Image 1 (cartoon, one colour):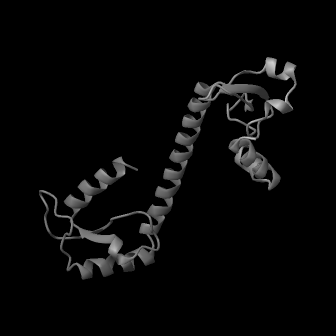
Image 2 (cartoon, rainbow, N blue to C red; image 1 turned 120 degrees about the vertical axis):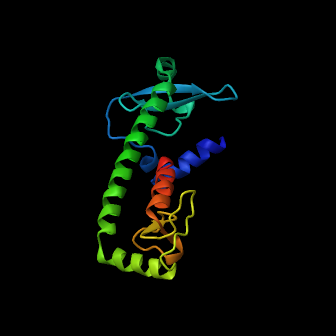
Image 3 (tube, rainbow, N blue to C red; image 1 turned 90 degrees about the vertical axis):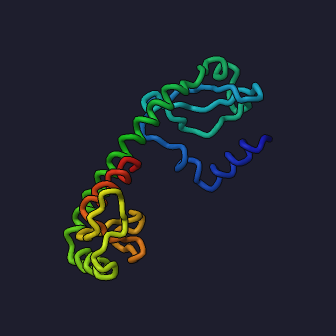
Length: 174
């Protein structure tokens, strides 16, 4: 028994496999792919989202007729669907984050933290980009990992000019 089949059986036994390889669509078909060592690997592929809905199925568990009827797995469609799905999911997560972030910036908790950072930095811009006015009136998040519970070290006072520059730089990568 190969390592993959061994792991697949263990995952099935403890009920993890179904959670890992699950879509809600009903239209699946038996497909195969050719492994790098030339061995045919069988699985079921959803015909709507093109995701594999099972772990690999041992050829021993399939009849000769089932193996003969299997078609080549549509990996291009699977990649396209996955890319599209995660792109949309990522977009929704970003929109949700920015909505919550905007609400947080309007909160009394943020106002207090912002005032504390400006006082700590003596209202002096800590970013210092070319064209800096030095007079800080805004506070910049150095990271968005801890928004809502950020330590003061995650925050820096900034003038409007520098804050606009660094914010546009950061958001290009988000």
